[in-house]
Image (cartoon, rainbow, N blue to C red):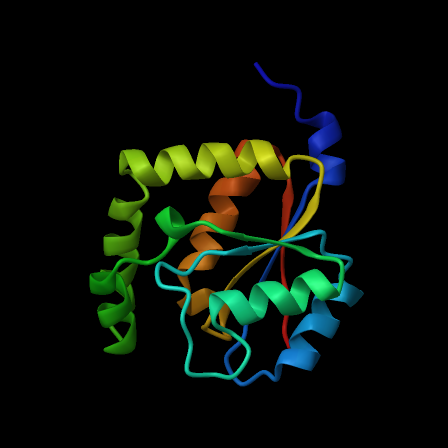
Length: 155
């Protein structure tokens, strides 16, 4: 059995959505939280919002001294995104929770947990409110695996 006593002190899993944010303010919030690694958990890391597509976001955070990682397997599948957009929160949670039982999601989660142990990380996607977003589910799963704590940021 893994000893979580050290990890629970050191591993912090922040989450943040970029909805209604400007890139500068978003990156500044990450810096203020002392984030070491930004983990993009969008299935499709594209955005109509300037600066938040994968390449531009990676460049912006790397300039701020923050590592960028995209983990596609932990993104919300299209059916889940559609349910969330339609306001069907219970269905969205059911779809995403089922997705999290797939081999690809479990492997990605396990690998990510190992990679972030002892670090100050932040999961990101679009939705501003973490309670309506799959990243909160991912963060909770990572906290279990790492013994870390979850903190939700606002920009």
